[in-house]
Image (cartoon, rainbow, N blue to C red):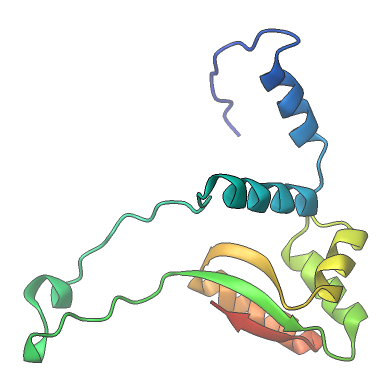
Length: 141
């Protein structure tokens, strides 16, 4: 992976301390931190998606109604873990390898819970299939 050039940070600065703290956080802690920032400052941390215009949208559709844009970004949500939580935890850890056993268990126990955010349709469908096979009830939003 290519490294990005960045401006040097003064040693002992607040930014450096914050970066060290974030670096030591688990994925679950980072997720909670981002949600707290979103709530505190009234912002969202979602990636901007460039609008694409399909031929049907550019020319309009019959009846003068614009075509409904197809959803391309999905969030995978475990609605319930079902009776076989261990299989669901294993499947979740396969899908999100950065999750530790404790974080995966906490996510499954806290259902309904978002486990993957802003993924493409193929990845979302694969995750849903794997989690459903393991016994979870999964929703794509």
